[in-house]
Length: 423
Image (cartoon, rainbow, N blue to C red; front, top):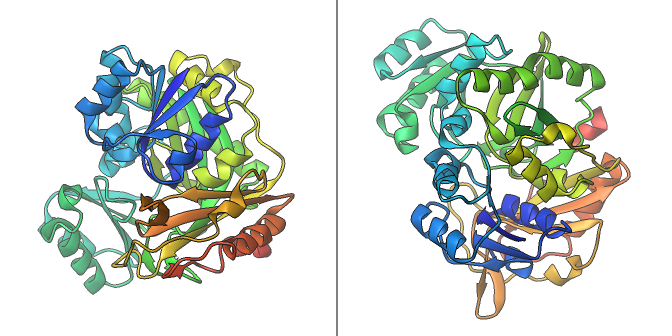
């Protein structure tokens, strides 16, 4: 069969690598892809938001399965357009992708169906938001309602910071229309855990757990980024936590969406906070996490394409979803200055060392092919992933592998997975 993957980052590279292992797949395309994806798929110069071109390409090439990796095209309704043309597509339709597309929607859904989450209020008027903050307890969290590249969340320690945050999101439109409405919620403390799941509208099957590191600097300092690294599984995601989430969060979310007439098929990413009162939902995403996919998918034993097709067909209950009994750690190699400003176009050395190895992976995020050489082309450049028998071994392997890669401006955190040592 022919598969088209929509997207261009490390997540899409991890998806492509998983799809390539499927015995059902003959040919892979990626739009627009990147220099690493080009080694296992044919990259086509169509942007992820060029819906008409994507539909035309899928029809012309007689694509059997489209996998939409990114949030913007999902929230924008690409799945609906492809399905209208009879093209099998993995990912939620527009009316279900709102689970990620609107934080106000997801918070209201959780309140209505009693799914554990932080206390909150929503605002469309900046003056009302500031009035509320004047009586609030700090620290407090401000969230842009819409998509903001994973960066529309502000943790404010003082009233002044919070007022500035409201101005930035709602008046200065730092994230465009994403800040037309904001959610103000209580600041929760505890361990964060990410759990990805496959959903077919009725049945949900969770994958192995993971935890990412959002801040740019060591010790969780600096600005929020799209993710500087991750590890899987999380030692803090115990059997007791899993049992609670199965009962009160996972199936409850799938059932709530169906109840609302928004049947969800695809991936639900649960961002959880393990608080003293028990696990609570921090956020939902409607697709694989990035860089969570880079540690979860390499550990997946089941055929990725077969599981995706079961989600589309509503037969996920017949799938035995299996993962390797090991661990993986991903360290992101970024361009120095990310996420604010950085240079790109630097040649990358050492990529050949990752070929034909089952322990080490190099997922391309921001790379391009220029004059026959692979060069840096973004803030997050590569995701260096390694497996090991346990988290400590995987972490040691991943950091050893980061030394194989050299490029000017290379930057990384040195404490990815350090929480492992505290578990």
